[in-house]
Length: 118
Image (tube, rainbow, N blue to C red):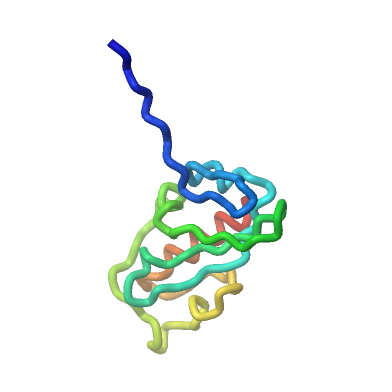
């Protein structure tokens, strides 16, 4: 009886052929430079982190949910976008500032900061 090993599917394959199978590979790849966050205000978990792949100069996007294991903090339920508490950081894809609002988008900013520090 043969036991088939489960192959880990690629999370993303770049146009140059580079493959990332999990968030750890993306996080540790020194040729991947995070350049921003494309927000989805109605469904924050569907936003995208944008990377430049220095090897081939391609921009590659990854779903924010891929990087959830990097964050251990609090996740707020209420979206504060457009309120007096909101500074609009999520609307600026290249802004890496920490969000001071207790907003459902704030934890994504925290993950982005972790990714930027590498």
